[in-house]
Length: 406
Image (cartoon, rainbow, N blue to C red):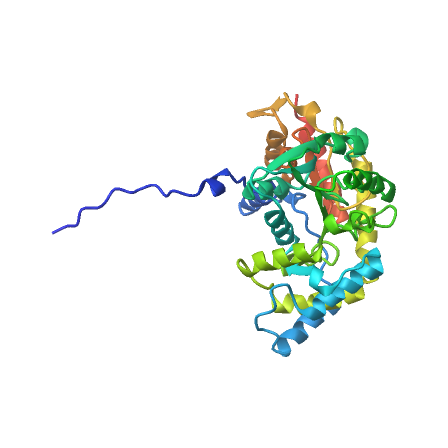
């Protein structure tokens, strides 16, 4: 006797996850790995990940934590010792005054951002996002059922919005303004004067909160980093996001944090307590060493990144049709490549930046990220977080592949 097999019923996923877009940075990295697995020499300029090793003194702190059996659950908001170290870092390096109960440590700055959005935004409320923006901003707003309102910051203005643009975008439904400086994907940095002008707009609009993503703080080639939380008139409405991934080359360690008004920090603690709870105990012990050492201990990374920026800027001037600016921070270029739209080579037709990225992967064996993922469909993102030799070869390949298009 045989059992009758029941017809397969398609899995019904939530509308929430079906509406969510896949991260384009992760997708391009995946495509590059698949091509490399076939034996192709692929140079990756797609991921925002420093190629430096984590400093030895940070690793030593982690090893000691393991030997000392620091392997138990941690407080949801992070060890008190770590939150105190973050408070001291913010005071010493940013001239910002916080208490430990205003700090929430999370599993990466991405979680800190997500916590803040979910704790502030109600369905239908608006979140202003300057474009270009980091890929996950819009999707986080979507998950919170908020409405993303985009304000274009073009290359002509160094990818930075003006106070007039900000004021025009604010409505009674606006709840949050979210931005990064130094910026991913453009590398642009808001000066203290520019931030003061934006702060003046927020002073006139007390219903708007500001999420300031400062994860690239240490990779800043111009004037000293300024946080928008420095302006006392709006500080209680600013949520500062930071972490160790970029400045200390600790991407895989997964630790970020936020500093905010106590009520916002408590809300994020409450949310995190029902999702991930406290982040890795060993990472937290390593993070204490990093925060106490501060920016001077990793200054060599910034020096190397600035040398790479200057090299890539020079090489990009030789790439016909690329329109670029000189970024003052992070480790990205974000050139306008629209001059290549409508061109083709063999079976490849370049209709947009997505097509161009796939073409440069297949023909040039270089992974890049489409600007469409960052809200700027005429551009591509180039990460220079790799060696000068690889950068030189990658740009050579890009030039050679582009020369074939007509």
